[in-house]
Amino acid sequence: MPARPTRVLTGITTSGTPHLGNYVGAVRPAIAASRDPGSESFYFLADLHSLIKAQDPARTQRSTLEIAATWLAAGLEPDRVWFYRQSDVPEITELTWMLTCVAGKGILNRAHAYKAAVDRNRAEGEDDDSGVTAGLFMYPVLMAADILIFNADRVPVGRDQVQHIEMARDFGQRFNHVYGREWFTLPEAVVEAHVATLPGLDGRKMSKSYDNTIPLFVPEAELRRLVFSIVTDSRAPGEPKPVEGSALYELYRAFATPEEAAAFGQAFADGIGWGEAKQRLADLLEREIAPLRARYLDLVARPGDIEDTLRDGARRLRERYATPLLAQVREAVGLRDLSQVRLGSLQEEEAPAAKPPLATFKQYREADGRFYFKLVEGERVLLQSHAFDAPREAGQAIAALRRGTLALAQAPATLGEGVDASDVRAALDAIAAADADRAAKTQA
Ligand code: TRP
Image (cartoon, rainbow, N blue to C red):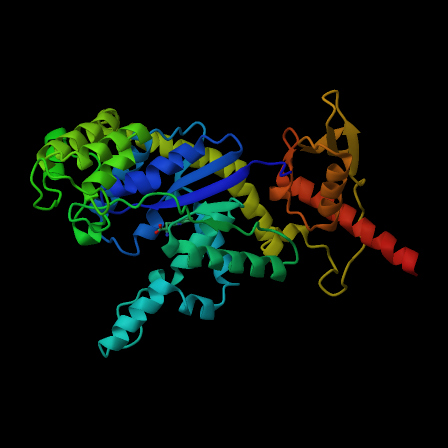
């Protein structure tokens, strides 16, 4: 039984204006999922990623504001979900470099977006890398840092992003291997198969690239005008109409209860006129969108409040996870405090130093009947575990921490009052060293 909530993380590229397809396919399901009490959700504005394509500063700013306001208006609760802007967490860019130094260049060569650019160049007789920025090439490494920095377990994405999650696993695994420990959780991509892709005005998939979208927050009159421009056939009122392949019906279904959808299907069979069907669709869309639109307009009128919300999210998140994790990663790779170098240790392997008293694990059962452990150093509690159903599970977690096969950031435990992750790390290292010492002595 996992002792900490499952971490679900996804990035939202801050480009373009959100449309109904984005709302139904991404925003609405993600917000619903964020209400699952068994998970800890991380939703962020991938503004650093957006720079790869968008290099118009005013548009970048505008788009970031619109997309943040869209998620908030649609019901994302920044008190329950980590909601932040990628560029407000500098540890992400720092981790990007650490990962860059273990990432295989050959793997990046195979990334779909980069390969497509190369193929286009070849087809046009250009240099392979003509017009390709290093940013486009490195995109998957930045994305890996987004994910690994919070030890995310699950990453909901579209099918086109699955390869990037696999690369994140690869880079995380290489880092773990090179630096000898499970520093990072390896994430899994989650592709939601049941989420509807919405048809656009012309019946093809609603997409900015087909120029067939209904923007989410256009004024009501414009929404109705767009609905009336949805392509239909020449069947007259009174003639039965099939629901299969009807964009109008599909759009209706995405916003209706099952009973309403069934009734609409019946109306098709009964020969509803297209004008009336469009009227009913527009009313239905308006029912769901009107309150969101009102909140959205209110939010974008107070951009300073959105700024505060985002900054506050990033500040709390850095304090809780990003800063301690980066401290561990720096330590892992050897970007360390020089004053801690023991004299002579540069020549001799391990100079024996005065050792502080060892911390110890204590296992116990609470009045709630469940099992716990803590790591204590004298009076000080360094680490307090979550509850386990069986003593064996607590024992296994302790053993994994002792062996160093369970990263602290993933441990089913929280740091003690005022305790720094690096203190716990040092205590665990000391225990591991003592364990190894003891093992060596019994063999000798
Ligand atoms: N590349 C993703 C997209 O285009 C956005 C993104 C950036 C992302 N960083 C991420 C998604 C981390 C999931 C996890 O949709």
